[in-house]
Length: 254
Ligand SMILES: Nc1ncnc2c1ncn2[C@@H]1O[C@H](COP(=O)(O)OP(=O)(O)OP(=O)(O)O)[C@@H](O)[C@H]1O
Ligand SMILES: [Mg+2]
Image (tube, rainbow, N blue to C red; front, side, top):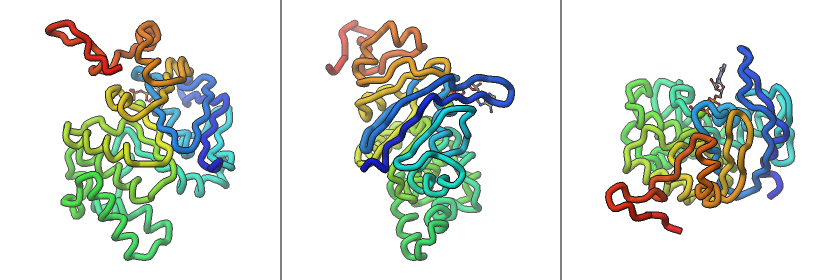
């Protein structure tokens, strides 16, 4: 399964206004891993994710997805492999109806109409949005948009799922449903989140970004137990690891 490895080497990204958002980021993710990229606002998480399927090009450094370096000529193949859910669903939805947005990817893969319909129905069902199929995306609520944006990626059945803040804006029921969907997704998944309880639930490994650099990379539980590291990176323990605010007793599950 070497073709599903993600290899990021010495990645730097400086925006046009001179902001150095990524300053020498390196890591490797292998097939089947579930990895969280965590860090404070502005740490560089979205910038990093947008490099993984070529929405942003590195200022310097190299990205390999499986057997290919990410270049203009490998981009179409890499975009079939890597499904990306953006932080802002408005960046993802542009068709007149929800149905058409979710059908867009499979249709462009050249799949027969029947299979496109099947994928659309399944993906909308998975995120609890089947009833929204005929609506224009701009009439949806924030959480509904987020769920539909996720469906547009699920309908492509990607080998690698990359999600920027997948649970933000979701109500507790939709959040729980998404977590169980992600748990069942057997391929590689990488996501950013400020929802550290979800990170603890889903990811054995976390990469901590701080001011555009990898500050830590290792087992999630070790990272969450390192109070100095968390404080330095403006992170807080997941709620389920914090003591009860009333009786002071710990709720740590480990
Ligand atoms: N288009 C842009 N032009 C200039 N600077 C940008 C641009 N987009 C992001 N930045 C800056 O790059 C840095 C990293 O931003 P990024 O969006 O990657 O952070 P993040 O870790 O995803 O934060 P958040 O948790 O708020 O989503 C920030 O300082 C941000 O202001
Ligand atoms: Mg972000």
